[in-house]
Image (cartoon, rainbow, N blue to C red; front, side):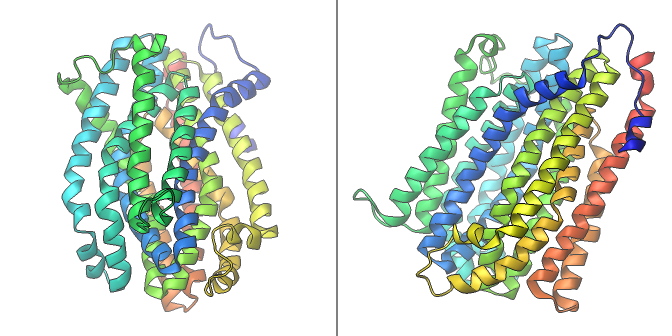
Length: 469
């Protein structure tokens, strides 16, 4: 970290420097609601995993795989929504409210179009899974889930655009409350529809899918009402004349968004491909993978919240031409991420069994096997905490600088050229099974983290004239 400090660019002219305590307060004020919203969003997936796990291990394996595939497609489209965040942050810092409105509207356009294109692909989920060698029963149950869950893609995409806008304008509190409302609704829907309470039929995995669609629709309505009725946000009139195209802004969002989407695809694809590999190994391995991924995702969502804060604060500093503020904003989120990474690693190492048992019915005969197998996977999850946090924080810091294409290529090499290859080799050729697959994740994330940190420092050195010229 000492090497980083030597590369700090000089402050821009006339800028009043904020001290480290001020940066900490600003990071936490913006970060806590964003992190809270991320954790509430995670609660939706975690609730699905827990309740489907109580329903049956085979159903859990099928939903784990189907959710992984759904998320791959979702994350590519959400890259366009994510592009809205740094663009709005910079435009707001420059006082350009018209640009804010333009990029948000076209972000909505692009994500809607993308979601509509996906529908026929997701409808044929079973055929795709059989094509890549998944077990017929897992593919069939997964299709029962996917043909309902796919209808949640459109509201989920729109929610991502609104979240990016509200967070970038430093109005994240209703992002938090809207997501909490959605998480509570999802838990209630799951309980009623999966198991058949309150006179409803017991729909199993189809009930979990219906709950997800209802949840994403509720969150969109809540955030949409807030954007149209809250004073400052309403002044942007985002939904007024939404039907009118703005091809210039469309191209801007698309140009910044597609590398973000492909970068996120590379990362999520690393984990989703690992789910496919675990499915080749067996139902126990796939079900355990689904549980441990949910546990590891808890810490990742906190790192992601800090990364979002980094994007917003770096984007605003860029708009103000504030070099020192940019540097300190980046270092503050880095320090917080590293401290939390060590903490989560210790938790995963010291308390694996209680964490895994949260997702299982102890009366199910397969539960003991999953707990035993999951202990080893959580050790590997502990190993990649620092790397996972660094790579996501620095990816988002680079997005704050509107640098997306080179990170995209670096991510593809790290996640796929290194990570997926290592997972396949260690899991199947070297014979380490699921533990080898997860060791490949550690290697891929470590390479990605090192590359993103290097790229960020290189960009700061090259762009120092932006602040002083």
